[in-house]
Amino acid sequence: MINTIHARITKIALVLLVFWFGCGKSDPENSSSPKSGQTTKKQIDIPKFLTIGTAPPGGTFFVVGSAIADVADNYLSSTVSAESTKGTQENIRLLGKGDIDFAMANAAISYFAVRGEGNWEKPYDIQSVMTLAPNVGLFVTKKSSQINSMADLKGKRVTVGPEGAGFGYFLRPIFEAHGLTYNDFKPVYGNYNASVDMLADNSAQVAFLGGAVPNPAVVRVASSHSVKFVPFEISATKQLFQDYAFFMPATIPADTYKNQDLDFSSMNVGSMHLITSVNVDDSIVYQFTKSLYEHRMDVVEKHPVGKAINPNNVVKNTGISFHEGAIKYYKEIGIWP
Image (tube, rainbow, N blue to C red):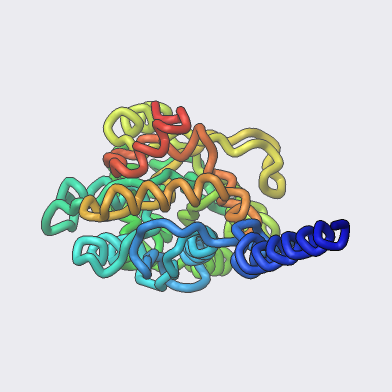
């Protein structure tokens, strides 16, 4: 009798053991839990491939856009890649043709694109996904110069960014608010590194330099030369803030740059922001926004601009509407204004 019971128990144990190995044991390669030091992809219903338009390699847009693509690629079922482009203007046109899905852009250029104003031949149906780092603008000159106001730019050689890059979309309003046009000074075209070089060798007397603070170009010129910042007129900035949503106040704290003893009142002349086409499906934008926001610290690890992905900043109005997919997510987490 005892032997019979023992045999039955052994048989039941063997059946349970087979069942456990065949069905119940989790496969470590297919487990939903992340491996140590490894990111897993969440399977969601979105296209197999997604592309983010950036800018030429070497610039902030390219670096940040690539960081965003890497993070999204880690957490979405899609393969997400960053594509080098000529910058905001080309990105907007590529979105219009459906050649890319998301893009890095300057908010000032986007502002005029959706309205079909400036050099835009028609309105473009683009929308914001999230507002990123401010583009703080400075007119820099040598401390020894007699240039102490925007009016003093008259007749001077002033760098105004790379030709065709779209800087005019925010520089022209600034000049106009100060009673200036491009005809009042001698525009000199070049990227920020070239602008610093031209200021150093006196090829230019004033250099416009913009970007997130601290701006590497400003750090470079302030470290090698004694410089000062040309102040904006209060009445001019007040008018700009009233007329254009993309202009915002920006204070550069004292000691940000070498020999900067006092806070400096500047302007955000058009934030970096992530945009998409109105034709991109709401669910795609929702999932993209969600993955990027939830894993924003991964972006910070790749570039400091990632710190701008925070509750107070991502929903800032820059003059163009937000995509419904992004709005849905922001409402869910309670940060939509």
